[in-house]
Image (cartoon, rainbow, N blue to C red; front, side):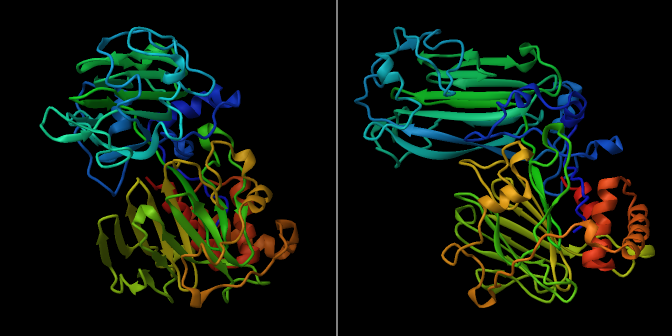
Length: 548
């Protein structure tokens, strides 16, 4: 509810971002979705002059003074582990660039990344031809096989994130499986390349270090910053991002390329102080939606989107992650306008298990079996940790009498979910990084650009969930009820005045700042949802302001 909400899952890095404004790369139109984006941004709690680091997921790790102050602020309270999505392409030993050369050679690729975001062939002793090299990081049927790979990084005692594997064979038994016996006397799948792309926001003190074999090229803002080309024993090189001479808050494009070209060893160690920050989509009970891109990279926030028709809709649709919302009427929603009645989560990220979350009058189920029947209670599986517990207690004022039953969910792939269960509807806050391969839904396409996530554009792109795609129980299906849009102008003057008084009282009680966007949207909630939705919306707003 409460379409005025400003989300605030900010880290200290975002202080610099807010001061710098929209990054130049975004202003020039280059800040677009990639195969992976490592997000280093959040939302607008800076109006309060604070940056939050709290997280209920993991305890903080002690951070040594080896990191500069601002970098220490970023890693304090960060997750225990992060991940990069990467693309591996498996080759056969018969390819002319594999199992054929020996020795380190710098200068095999041009110092500037190509327009297709791939290394540009320059040539040298360790490469055969341009035609053969151009196959390394492109899908070529019959020559290589593409395999998506999630690379986990764990937090070190000094606060950096590290992937360290002295026997790096991530696709054993996959692809062509063209094997050779390694130094450990075991058979492994050699002969592959790895490609990874990311974006982050610059703050002083960030670093990137790689040690391993064979070829490694690291580009930042399309400029070659680490060159370990050739077939060689493990080599190490570091790069301080300060050397790019950037302004604090600028967006940085990271492109990483690796090749394992020859038997019999394979070592891979990457260490960085860059940390991912998830963006947030909030769905209030009426439902209003604040998409992932709203306010991103310091852009001005716009009013949340009103999705008032009934039916089952995509909130997040991705090849691996599927989150659906069920909108329908309740006794509190006038004129057939909808509320958020349930969430359904499923897909490969949950090993095709299904989680359904309904209001207090309904159930929470895992693969159809009711869970979390006690209050409070917990439910733990290898890919999910659910905690059902009381929310903040309100003992007086406007919010008295609105006890919150809160569901906190922590999933694999750095996805988090907060759900307020009310008697007849729910509110939800989804926290996640941008997903490999793109995404869409009522939470937007998460491409750093709110201008293409207007209500009209989302509705034109995102249809109702088809029967074949639905992960909701068939017996509770909600029929589509079209509802013409309404605005604050459709509310009569007397009701608006009463709503303004109630909204100011509720905002003051929760310590929320007043501005025209907040008040207008809150009064809208009062006009078309009633006083109950105003109070519940303020509660959700306070939770989202404190979201990690």
